Length: 226
Image (cartoon, rainbow, N blue to C red; front, top):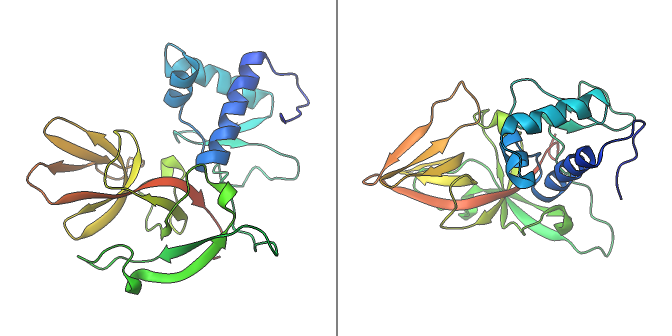
């Protein structure tokens, strides 16, 4: 069902609002301007920005300046100080409801598999319908290197175990003994792991460096353990 608004939206504006809503529901965070443009066939991200600004003027979304995914769908009763991210929250499972019990991985010791028993802090039961792709575990996020992708320190990243990924996907990657969450960009002779925060530098991984994809980000939970 589409969101009712006090101001009538154009068909294109409603299409963009529906796209944002679906992205938040399915992957846990809103699309970038470039992703909106590619999905809807715009010539550039600037066209998407124009439509987003129009939606903001009509009061159906709020935009965070400087954040590529800084889009928040507004709703009655919410204050403008709430964060731009609209991810699903963990709730106590309903009696008899289908549950997905996921291991929560904290700090990963150097050289040890992510799902080694010593890394698992607890198991958390969540509603499997929160995720478009079924995750295998939750990883506690450390730091703010992915801030502009809506992934903040203390969030729980839902991860699907995988050994490969497409360029542009957000991945859990291992470089030597270190595990990090970054956006993957592949090249013919190397890969880059890109942060979503200008305060951090990209990580370049050469062909001779030990590197492996551990998983794909498929959703995000916020406020579950606070």
